[in-house]
Image 1 (cartoon, each protein chain N blue to C red):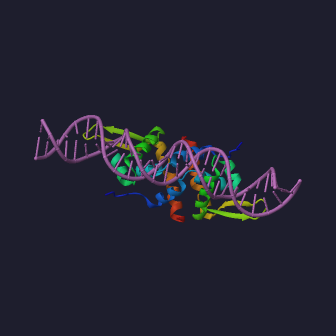
Image 2 (cartoon, chains in turn cyan, red, blue, purple):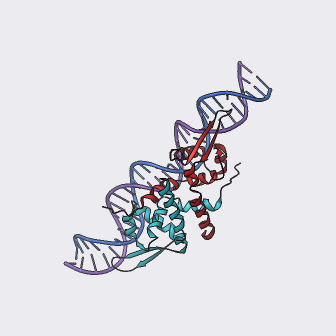
Image 3 (tube, chains in turn blue, yellow, purple, cyan):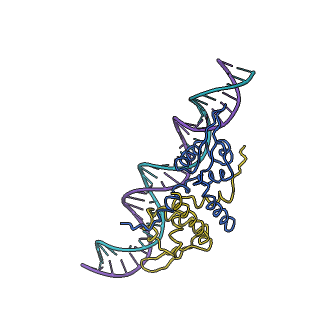
Amino acid sequence: MKELSLCPRLSKAMELLGKRWTTLIIYQLLDGSKRFNEIESSLPISGRLLSERLKELEREGIVQRTLFSEVPVRVEYNLTDKGMALKNVITGIENWSKDWL
Amino acid sequence: MKELSLCPRLSKAMELLGKRWTTLIIYQLLDGSKRFNEIESSLPISGRLLSERLKELEREGIVQRTLFSEVPVRVEYNLTDKGMALKNVITGIENWSKDWL
DNA sequence: GCTACAAGTTACTTTATGTAAGTAACTATA
DNA sequence: TATAGTTACTTACATAAAGTAACTTGTAGC
């Protein structure tokens, strides 16, 4: 019988942020909204996974999706307040990386 | 040809911290050294992966492994300065989680 | 009808993770 | 002497996640 001293907060957060690409996608959106293709070309990620991750982030309320019915269609993604609140965390990781990697 | 606006610092850090269990293992070690079995029972992780992750963390200089040739053998793991420097990052994630999850 | 475009989706392969059993080296107990 | 117990791992195998590339949908212009 395991007596988990697992921190549920950290654990839940890492389920999200720990998934591959998630943090990098959020990073791309920190300086404003971007289109699907823009994110896709700014990261070495495939459309398949980008689509999956954006759906997860939308479901979690971290990213907002806006559809423009133009021709061809345009879709913009931007961070919600919940997403923007991750800015400090991401900056912290960058700083650690700068100091130690 | 992709013109990646990928932040190499964040990217490299997330390759490490984004791996499943890594951050949770570091969290377990924030308050002092622990033995293999202690970590294993404090997280829902298998020995197989824990062993793999600890090796990665040791290789990256985040965790230090100390062997005590007792009977039965005892092995302790503790964070290096590089590992301890992640405390702020982890606290940041916890706080975000508290505020938004 | 044919081509072009953005934003996906589908089908398939490779890699990572999960699960359970096994190993090494030694001690303590019957 | 034989058996069981201990820690810290490994190994073998099954399942889930990620990677790759081709295909779809809706619309416009030629």
